[in-house]
Length: 103
Length: 131
Image (spheres, rainbow over the protein chains, first blue to last red):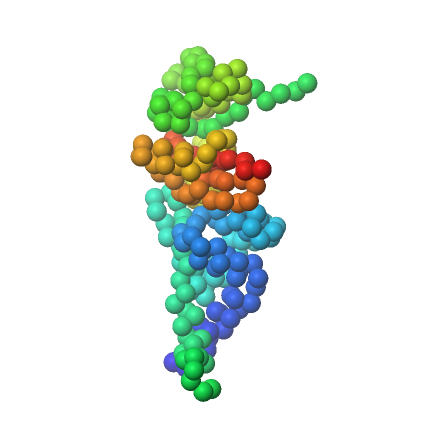
């Protein structure tokens, strides 16, 4: 169980280690449920990230493997959603004391 | 000098497309010429520029068209883009008419865009230049 937890955490840390992937999470935080096209235009226009569509698609796969992004198919469309659930294990492993509480 | 006079989108059904592009989006019919079989040379123009660029509503009969359109729609990629004065106003007007938007108005700095489904197998981007 502990080994499994570490393994999942490793995926999450790897996913978060890249600036483009963090920008993708920021954009999904602002509007959840985006197509690949919308994410690409936001990364280009707002972050100056000139990633190709293929590169963004690969970043999304890494985020999906880490459980931070889920894909929803609706008819012929495909939308990407943010799932911050996997981040909980970070706070579980290294609890943050409440403010005012001595460290 | 070379000019763009006609551009096109592949539509699943020409009559359904004509209804959508005129009654809903607001274009007007320009040319409707029988081509043999059920196919028509069917073009619409903007009422603001009746002698401007024509949009050809092109039949989707070729076997490559279906997979091509499906792959674009899956990734949210528009077949083409039209200019409007106010994306938010068009979004509200068209939504009230039952049009499905896959991307709500998005401010990208120099341009505000939104993406809708034309009910004929394409996504269409609406763009408003802000600068």
